[in-house]
Amino acid sequence: MALAVPATLFSMMRGPEGGDTLAGAVIYGVLFAINAWINLMVYRGRNWARIVTFVFLLIGAYYMFVPVEEPVPAGVIEWIINLVCLVLESVAVFWLFTQPGAAWFARQR
Figure 1: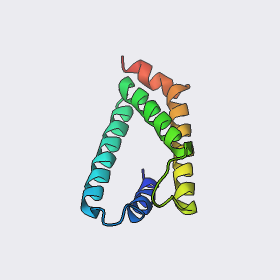
Figure 2: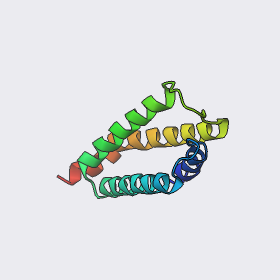
Figure 3: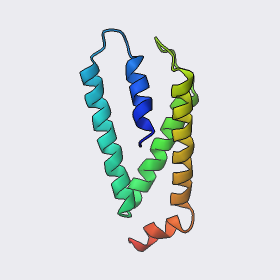
Figure 4: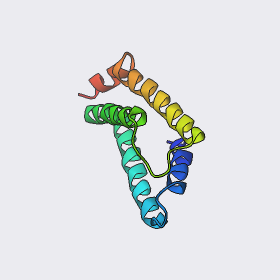
């Protein structure tokens, strides 16, 4: 999540001209809070949170690699930060679904 902060700042800086920075900050704040809560639920062994994390990974990977027309395209540094985030999250999700990580969720039932 720490790497998502600079990526978020880059994204907000290249937002539409005249865009409401406060509204963007509130939206990103809510998204960070939801992500932190889901991570907490994964830590507590909730299987649904593990599945939600995997689905979010798939959605994020899709939007990372599918070309989208944006008024201002993402810069190289922002793209690299997003790629590093995607790789780290992929490794974490892999560990959640393989042993011994999967055993963590089996014990909770």
